[in-house]
Every structure is written in C-alpha cells, then in structure tokens.
Image (cartoon, rainbow, N blue to C red; front, side, top):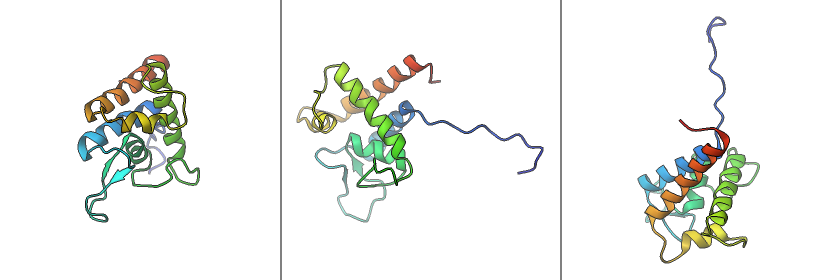
Length: 136
C-alpha cells in the first residue's frame, strides 16, 4: 500500500454478524441434528451440513473444527460471543432451559425445523443490533 493511501478501518465482527452468517450457512449447506457436522461422504464436502452450533463454528472459523471454542483457534472469541448471545436469547424467549446443553437440546428437538433455527438465529442477531445500535 502506498503511504498516501487511506487505510480502511478494521472491521469488527459482532456476535450478530456471526449469527447471521450461521443462518446463511445453514440455508446454503443444510442443517442437521445430533451432530456438529454431517458429511454423507466424509472428505468430499468442505462445507458440510451443520447443527446450529456447527454453523456458528463455521461462521467464526471458516472451516470445520471439533473444538470451536478452543482459544488456540482463530475465531474462538467470535464463536463464544455468538454462542452466548444465542443462549441468552433462547433463555429469555423461553425456548431453552438453564442447563448446560440448552442450545444442543433446542437444536435437536424432534419438532425443530431449519426454518425455525434460522429465524431464531436472525431474531437474536436483530435484537443484539437493536440493543447495541448495530446493523445496517
């Protein structure tokens, strides 16, 4: 870059951004239950179907990872922030309990649907934007 060129400010990724990206990921690549990721033919698809947490991991890391909140992984902070936002939203809206695996239980409910999951991810992101003055 030439010294006279104005540099763009760094882009801050918000938890809302991560949740919206997760919803988009699920709509494009598919949704699954009881597994972070599902590859019908392992090794064949770099962008597998995912559960809600797996999609948040893909949005935060840009790749499949078994431990998306491991602080040694780039994107772990984004994953943890988005997961916390979703969990808080699920609890406040009465969709999840206070238990440790509330997001997984919500995602894996036999009556759950892709449409409901992506709508909830988007609603949680919209709420964050309203509270924090973000969004377009």
